[in-house]
Length: 217
Image (cartoon, rainbow, N blue to C red; front, side, top):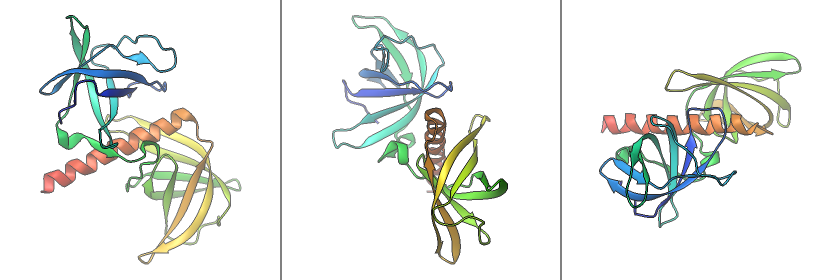
């Protein structure tokens, strides 16, 4: 995908637990290399120094108000009238369309432990987003609509890392669909870092699903 000169990018590190965002603009594009101006930390308002090889998730908004995201890596620097940083730019099929980034829902199985009344129960998700999950129920659950539960969600990332996200949650409803039973769960007061883990995981799974579809075509 060709990004227009001046397109604002938001960079989010994927190599650290720390939640940070950096703003920059596209200065030039040469094939699969993007040249950006030096990014600014959104909190400190200071220029950020990006190490070669550092990996980020970049997001931008098109003129049609559609948000896209892609994975990128710092390749180096280019000196000129305007000093720039070189980022890798993947092929267009690896750009993921995002409608509401923080609540992107992805259909994928994830192991979840539910703590309810000091007892623990194991489930697998039907789908997951940064706002909640749907659990697959093989029998009637011990909890009901409106109950408060504690979740431990296991997130396996493509690089081999595994993150365990713990969050309080509310059971929204128990329902049936296509002769299967599910529990719709809404997260409550999820830690910002944990929420970012879920957002990254959903983004990775979206990209993985898209690659599988493209391979079948």
